[in-house]
Length: 171
Image (cartoon, rainbow, N blue to C red; front, side):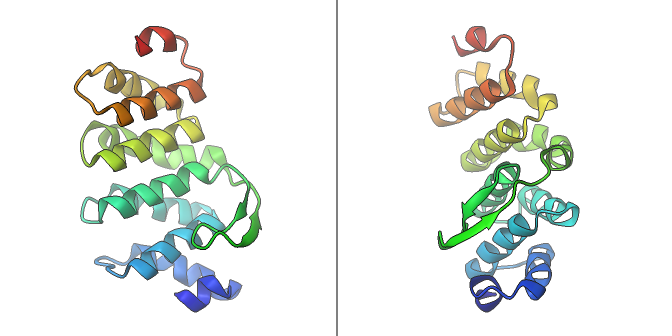
């Protein structure tokens, strides 16, 4: 995984990305680089892998959150590698495709689970402008029992989506 991602060996990147689909993947080195490979490739299969990985409760919360962050960042071009920060420019990905893949998973991801996964879900929803998640985010934000960091994330997502009642929700 290190050689494929870090060198990089471009022809082997799809196989590294596919490693994220393997059940029981336990190596942090492989998971980090597999998420990054899916992000760098950014195709339909890779977006589906990131979505499935982030929705699987058997995976560690920090890695699920990282996969959601990668999904959220997909629509933006980037100049830096996600693992090392090296200079590796990447063109913006297909926002609509990523939003469509993530949209059906968002209600469950936002409703319950580890805080960092919920925060990353809100981030991805906002960055991808998943308008179908606006009401879920608004309801979540209205819950006074949620942690401040989650409330902040939901407000930021609603702002990115241009929610018409953001001021009322924020109060």
